[in-house]
Length: 138
Image (cartoon, rainbow, N blue to C red; front, side):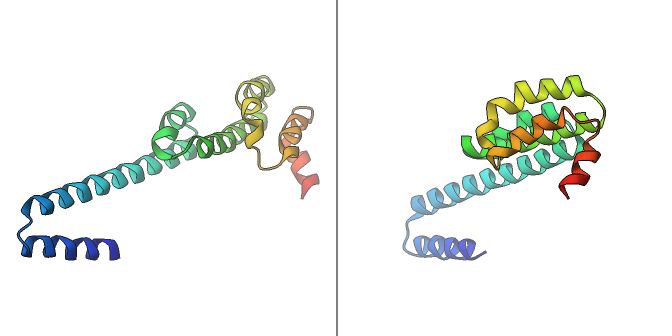
C-alpha cells in the first residue's frame, strides 16, 4: 500500500513536470512488477493445492515457478518428498517408499533439517508401522 502511494506521487510529479515518457516508463515497470508478483502468488497457491492433493508430478513442475532460489527449492523438495515417503510407508507400500528414499530423498540429504533426520527415515523402513515409531518419539 505504501509503495503504491509513493509510486502514485512519483507519477503525479513526473506528469506535472511534463515528463510523459518517464511517466509511461514508471507505470509500465510498476505494472510488470505487479504482474510478476501476481503470477508468483498464483504459482504458490497452485503449489499448495498440489501438495495438499498429493499431486506430486504437478508439485515438481510448480516448484521452480513458485519458489525462488535453488537452495530454497531443494529444501522444499526434501520436505515434500519426505511427506510423500511417510505417506507411502503409512499406506504399507514399503517398496515404493524405499525407492522414494533412495531416488528422491538421498540426493537431497544435505537439505534435511538435521543430520539425524535422514537416518531416522531409513530406520522407519525397518519398522512394522509408522505409528509405532511416532508413538515412541512423542
